[in-house]
Structure formats: structure tokens, C-alpha cells
Length: 162
Image 1 (cartoon, rainbow, N blue to C red):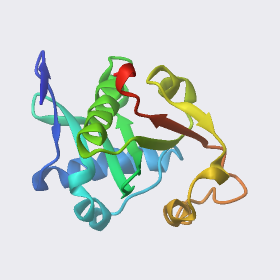
Image 2: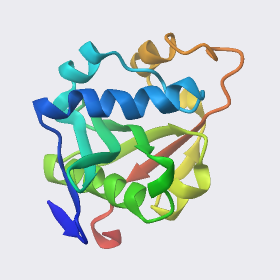
Image 3: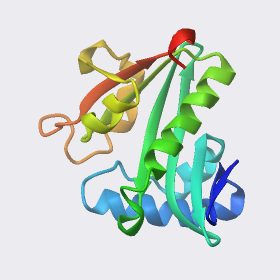
Image 4: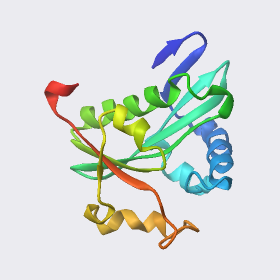
């Protein structure tokens, strides 16, 4: 857990589900994130990290594992009043650290903010190079398939770069 000035980054707990849902729903209504139901958040709770300030969840991010060599950064959301303070960076780094700990050497994301992920060591890839299994979630998106303008990016662990 990371703490600084009443700010904590930690793994989500069962009592955090509704707060995570509220943040994700807010950004999904704006068309910036894929919506997640309460049921999905409960199912994948162990994927989530979150940021608290004064006990209130202000940001969230998840590392979803697909198989032994691939995971995804998803549901990265930071409340507007807390953006541009490094919370997103800290959350993504927590997910990447967990990927390294678990032995996963490739992590992808689908994003509208490629410059943010590029600063964290991700590089752009073609969406069609990702395995078909990842598209199961995309079917839920109103922009799929013709209006999707997300950029696929990949991070690959190299021991010398961390």
C-alpha cells in the first residue's frame, strides 16, 4: 500500500464495490470507459486497485489476467477533481508491479489516452494482434465495432527497464 498526504493506493475490498461502480459508471456514461455491472465488479474484485483520500474512493484501476503471458489494464478512472496529480500513474504502476510479481510479462490496454500510457512504457500495437478472447467485453460497448477509436497499447516487462 502507498500512502501520501491522506492518499492510499490499495487492493479493493468487498465494501469498495459500490464506490468502484460509481466511478466507472460516471466515466462510462461519458463514453470514456466500458460499463461494468455490480456483478462484474464483484466477480473481478481481486483485479482492482483503488485510491482513497480521506476514506473516499477517488480513483480505480484493474489488472485483468487472460492467461500466463497476457493481462490487461482496464477500468482506469480518476475523479475529475483528482486528475493530474499522479494517481493514474500510481495505479497503473501498482498493476504493472503486480503483473511482474505474478510472472506476467505482457500487459495491454485499450485507451483514448495513448500519450499517458506511452510515458509509462507502453507502445502502440495493432488491435488485430490481440487474441480474439479479449473482444468479448468489447461487444458490450455501443461503439463496437465500427465506431471504436480506442488505441491498443502493449507493455512488455524487461528486467533492466524496471
